[in-house]
Image (cartoon, rainbow, N blue to C red; front, side):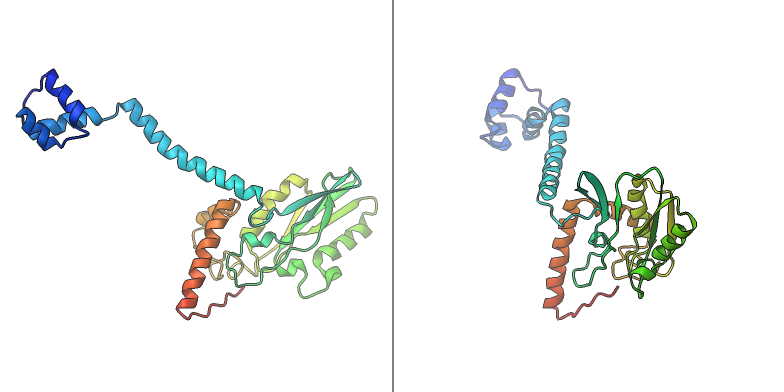
Length: 264
């Protein structure tokens, strides 16, 4: 391979953006491979610059996604899906269950999503109170009985009678068609409200409940993947992407003449 002198190197540096390597080689009467190797040496970034350039390539899309997430949160895209919402009345901070919280687990648009029950409690526990959260599916929620015939309601009546000196709070967090995935998600949020006891009545919906392997809402059999998916649902950008994919899939189903009816 021909050794280039400084004059030839300078000519290649000045001309490689304007003239092909073949023409430069012919002009300098040297091997084309030598010219191409010199061009690669000239155009190759130093390691430090390559690292910075690569870092920028990753950071810019990441910043774009983070910015989009903040925008979606600012416009409250998808609504508030926190389990517990707060409101101040006469200087006292109260908590209440978000009736739309089950939207976390039901991603098909053609089904009736069950609502959470209305339950209100003070954010700050009084010194003499005993707080119980009851979690489960439709049986805990009270189906098919009336409001005062649910087991959390009956439990409160019995505890009030047995411990009149205590202020007993029994908060019904039961929702139809959910299973232990949802209950686990709710429990992680409720621990910060100083519960004295969790009562969980589950088992009926493990197969057909939301995210169960027999449910129309199932997204896989691997437990770790389902738990990861449940965390992703708290990201607004993920929900937007899921909504777009669902809408596109629905259009394809209609164009193919598929009559899809999701079941709980």
